[in-house]
Amino acid sequence: MPEGEDIHFVKVGDVFDLHVKGYLVVDKDAYISEAVKVLVENPQSRAVYVQDQDGKLVGIVPLRELLRIASARFGVRAAGIGSFFSNMSDVMKSHVDEIMKRPVSIKADETLKQALQVMEENDMTDLPVVDKAGKVVGELNATEVLRFMIEGMQKGDERHKALKSERTGKAKRNKG
Image (cartoon, rainbow, N blue to C red):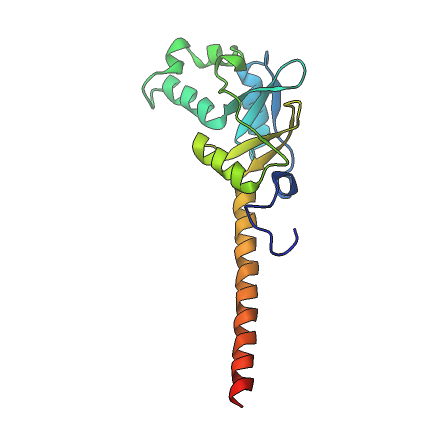
């Protein structure tokens, strides 16, 4: 990324696949067990995106939701959705569209600032990046945003040190 860019101007499309490669997708009629399997096989992701027959994003199954179901089943938390299932095998035989959350997404031409706003408003750490047709093309992971911000701060610190050094040099030349 060119020096001097910040979160207000950098596009999601410039960042979303720099460090986290790939995203997880299942079809709307997939079993919950399939969503669990792809999450376990890809521990870097924390969500599975649900698509319709045309490949359009129709829902999100966050890891947190799967943990809620498991914790209700095993008595760790009060029953919610878990109370609808008599045991874990029933859950695994259910379809993802029974537990998926409404789709929240961002487009590649939106800014990181906009993406952060969407993440904050929806309490998300992973955000699907969709094209104009609503098909998932990537995932913006919060760690990518943080990495970008840290790299920007480090560059800013280097620029600050250089400017300070330059000013100090000018001050010494002016005195001498």
